[in-house]
Length: 146
Image 1: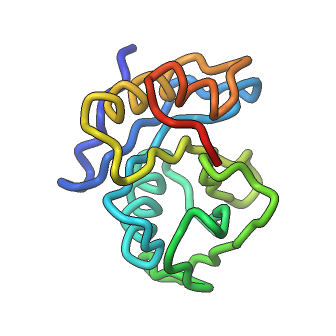
Image 2: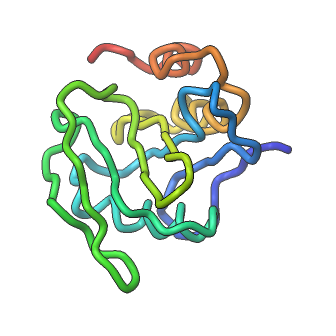
């Protein structure tokens, strides 16, 4: 199955692996338009919840990869906690759910050119076992510097 951008939100740029693997470092990729988590995360949570049929309880972010990180973001019928992590991979966003494995997404920097970003979106949504986030970025010609 070829991964495609989800048509859930006209400006959301997200891919998810149709067959997630616990051996993979990421389950897909996300290309936000800015580094403002308060603006970007509600659309991501809504899309992932809809696509996976799950309810996101918390989102984990590397705190230095974002300008604005709220403690909570709005989601339908609830507030979702946002965790700030100092020792996390700056290229990964993690969504946590009740009683199921979390979903890790490769974070494509907002200022990335369309060609490399689209390659990263597609590559991260298929068979990434054995690859790190930096490997995925390098394979698609994106900078890996932290």
